[in-house]
Image (cartoon, rainbow, N blue to C red; front, top):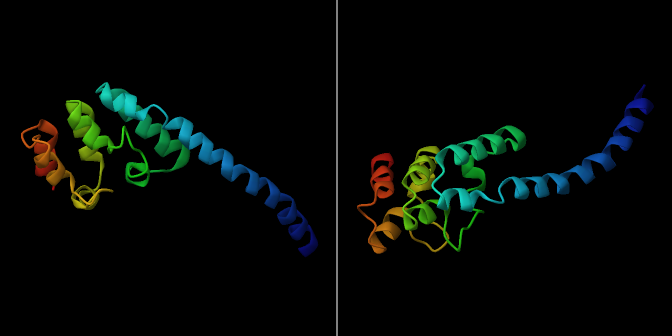
Length: 132
């Protein structure tokens, strides 16, 4: 009985090792056009993309938000720069408050960056202010 379990485990290990890199590639392809969706201000498509990634890979928006850069900016910053109000407010609503208030890669919080860019009266900035 013990030998059977050991053989099954030994047979399953190579398959488990090979499936990890392909899943990472699948996640990258699933998120490939998310910046285009944000710039186009397509709220319904963005919602679908977030839902697909959550159901297929069990990842929440907060898990991959920091890893995605659109022309060097985060998705919310990109939405504010392109006046993509619908997509930007959806992202603000989906992100945890703690992550919205924390500094991004350049050391600036979203609120500070929006004020610095002169976007403090942007609807995305107002939604961010209400959320935090």
